[in-house]
Every structure is written in structure tokens, then in C-alpha cells.
Image (cartoon, one colour):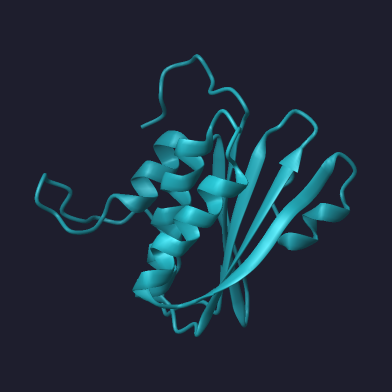
Length: 147
């Protein structure tokens, strides 16, 4: 699956199944999760997709100056899924930074989960927007998890 902005849908074999915009508010995180659960109801990686969407959507709410956050879901011919979260960017770029990650830490797990569960992930900064995306194959790889 090509990793790019929502124009990806023009690539043969890849189609947008839905795009939506939510307010940049904490309550929208739950709304985005519920929307994705319903949209990906029968997808074999639904739970992973919902968890990762929740993480990157939350990062957008917490770290960006956006009033609204867009979400795009694309699928390919092999039922792989790509989810893109689009916001107005922040002072810093998404990264795997040094955060306290003990059992009681309140942050620092989102990008680590993204790295562990997704097949690929990344971000595209094109001011005035930033797109954080991840892809999931329909069936998870059978190799050792990445660290």
C-alpha cells in the first residue's frame, strides 16, 4: 500500500472507504474509535486498527493546534487497511521520544504501539497540515514483532 496523503485513492487497487472530520476535543477520541469499529466491523485487524487510530488521534488532540481532525480509511485489493489522521501540525514532529514508559506513565506509548502493531507507519508534513498514517495487512505477519 502506498503511504501518502488522501490522494492515495487514485492509485489502482486502493480505494477510500470513508473519510470523516471530528472536532479536536477529547470526546472525539471515543467517537473516532466507535466510528472505526463500525466501519471495520468484519476486518480481521479491526482491534489493532481501532487501538492505533485511538493513539494517533489522541496525539492530534493533545499536541496540535487543530480545530478539526480528519480521518481517512483506505483498503487495498488484499484487504490491507491504511488509516490516515490529518491535522494542522504542531511545534514538533511525531517521534519515538524518551518518555517515561513504566506502568504508571500517562504518556509515551502511542508511537511505540504504532511501531509494534503496524506493518508500516509514518508522517507527512505539508504545511499547513500533517498526516500520520499506518498500514495493517489483513493478516498479521508471522515473524517476530519489531522493537
